[in-house]
Image (cartoon, rainbow, N blue to C red; front, side):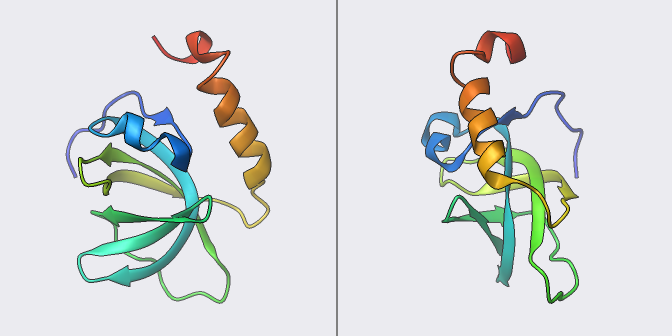
Length: 110
């Protein structure tokens, strides 16, 4: 992997079209490997993620925060990722993202 940018805006699946070509952070569930990419479920939508190796098979869902660049085809080119605990609250996270990208955007991004 190459040098990692300093800022990855946190977005939800509804914001993907707006952020193509930019560095973003997505949170979701790793599903399965499909050829040269893995399927990543974000808010019920499947996103294709490249440059990531699938973790070992597990009986539990693998929840990840992935930071990378969205290309023009909607693929996420992963730069780095962090595995999350099974207790991660997706509903609260979605509310936070809506605030961060909405009325409080100036507090978080230039």
